[in-house]
Length: 506
Image (cartoon, rainbow, N blue to C red):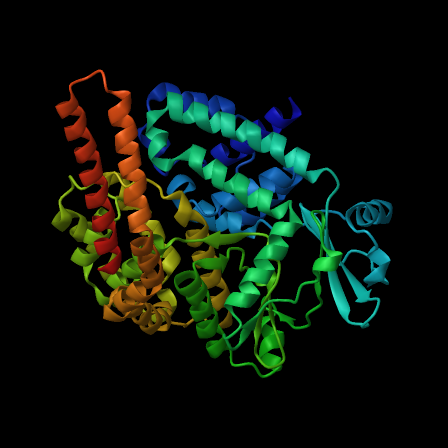
């Protein structure tokens, strides 16, 4: 019941601010729905626009970890709560009081065989969030400074139970309110759950650190902390301590002599490189998770939330950005339809016209007034008209893109997001779908194709034996019919095998 009432409190709070449902919902809703909303939100606080973000965030923080995460997730869904409310929820900081030293020692002893062999001089918590807190320590052998991240006691059980309640309600919403199906609340809650589950098993964050370190080994000006596997487990993560100026401290960055315009451009290009080249990106790149080293290196910490995009989604994203940059709206419309994001019964030219209505108004504006976040928000507004279903795999990307843009603009308010992206996106498209990409794909598949050819005789022998067995099994039936069936199976299998090989070669 406590979980249910916390959920009702969250819903009541958001509904009172005209959030939680798509913009304009209550304007067009039947009278009984509007009355129900008024009754449900009676005496609920309504905040002024000038301080709504901070007031709302303070209220949500008091509801606990799940609702902090839910609020942060809703900040990625301007299609549900509107662009203004999504912006307000970006103020939701993930900070809670620390847990006791006795609990810290108990967790270390349970998770690590010999914690003292690596971790010594453990400090008091230097940061305490809803899921974990971070301590500074010293490596027992090398004397190197360490950062030790420790999960809150029993946080997994609390989050799992509250997420299960949200999942049930999402299923009910899709079942009884068809209008919500386009927004895919069930899939959205599943993505939120996977994200939180990744945060509550620190072995997953350790693996993410390891993978990203390998991916960016040749990338200049960007790195992540080194990892200590021997002092990490499900509830403990030990990393190299990294020094740097917080990305939020712009005055300190300027005083240290950093080129803020260069930082802004490099951050955008690093993010797009992670997304397009690797398909694996830091999905929580807010100012608190970015440090700037003395030499200008951007250091990303806290990889508890990471996102992945498959090759098709990366191509789709790149062509969307390239379409807006080059003003090729028809191509942009075709990409949406080819990817299956917009049903193919819609007219390409009509959809291109709608996309033009989003893209053209930004062409003549100053660089500091052109926002990817604004473009995404406007794009959401036309999706319903063309039955575009929400793509869950793109939600983390959308959220991170808006966050990175905000950090870049804090460095340089006049940074031109599109100029910073154009060459990188164009080069990636040429490499991924041009002749070079085709040759590379053929080279990548050559070994597999050769192995398939080498296995073909054995495969045909197995098919022949199977056909004979089938013929013997059906010996009571006319022989001619069994022979024809056996030949048909063999020829079909041979044709399928040859078609597969030809496809691989081409």
